[in-house]
Picture 1 (cartoon, rainbow, N blue to C red):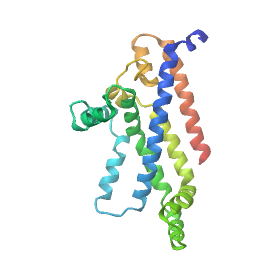
Picture 2 (picture 1 turned 90 degrees about the horizontal axis):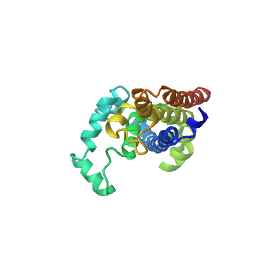
Picture 3 (picture 1 turned 180 degrees about the vertical axis):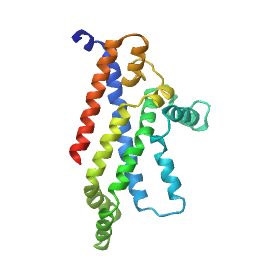
Picture 4 (picture 1 turned 60 degrees about the vertical axis):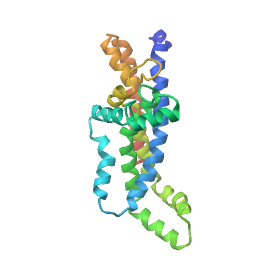
Length: 222
């Protein structure tokens, strides 16, 4: 087992998963925090529809998300062509595609936690700060974020955990190219298909351990 752990075959999907999860997590934290705060204060016609759309990735089958990503960002779409021109390379079947897939499926967890965190007492404190003369960004950084930090931290950890375990959308949109797009979940699937059960178990144990640690951190934060 020690020899197996030292091989490139084992560690390559691990490092790629860490890179994808880190990038997707940062995107989700930024987008989820700002959109969550916006929706916590927003009052407009059709708000329920917008919120439903934002939460859809948490209930849609991963294959549906993968299909939609291929349709929207594939080489035959206008958006996909535009991104390929900007990046000078296609997005689909690259590690960037894995980041996009992980970001989409993890976003609802961060968004929902942020929206809840910015409601209630936080809104009253924000209003009091505005009355005292604080600017919009001062209110956000020195009032909103500190008061909502527990909810934001929980949402961020859950989003990271979801991004780490993403399989279906990643498999469809990014593929399973060893060293380029193969993350731990897709590597486990391929290992089982190839009959490499011991290798699959090593990845499974690692993924369970990381997921347990992140969920424990959420419970500790409650």
